Length: 233
Image 1 (cartoon, rainbow, N blue to C red):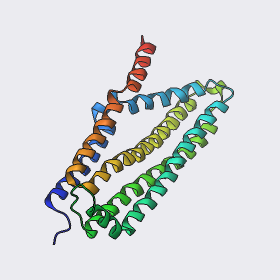
Image 2 (image 1 turned 60 degrees about the vertical axis):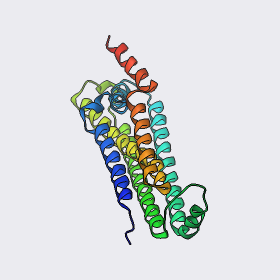
Image 3 (image 1 turned 90 degrees about the vertical axis):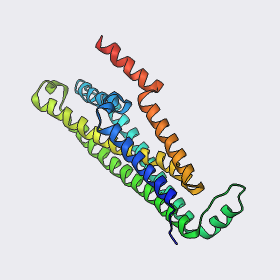
Image 4 (image 1 turned 90 degrees about the horizontal axis):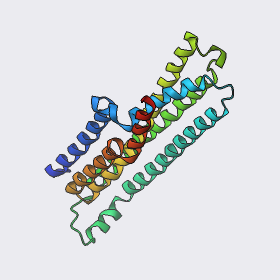
């Protein structure tokens, strides 16, 4: 007896393609240049350049600490999520019994339920590694902030190189943080698989549509793009 039906395999393949396709579109394609993440990457460079002109940089370090705390929160949350997914895996017998008594028709077995729970655990483990690495990178960024040249040296080649170096590491940390958050969003879509493969396709589509709208059509993007247009005019 096969563990996955043909429709399950198709739905899981759709989920993987949707995740990887959205990640490619949002990070590597030309289309990504107009997204909210790309615009904020530009502001990281602007921040580093303007920090060179400030004698007192306590505000910059406070912002850095806030970013680190937010990343640590999500890393901790992902550990709790891993624990919850493992609980679902351990309680597969009880969960399949509950699913059998639901008013909706959910075809499942203990092996299938356990396989789905393992997949959910993998998603959250991936998110944890991304958040943990982003937190480590933010620590490195904090060190580079402390090594920023003084305002008197802001026009030197060393200062210009340091700005690009710090902003580049900053952007990398933000990219890994975004990947962790993306894993959280797709985990919500993955939960639809417990109700059936067609539900997985539907929930994955909804997740991609919501994330795409926030990146390329949201009020936040229009506000940032408007400020960009205003500063260039």
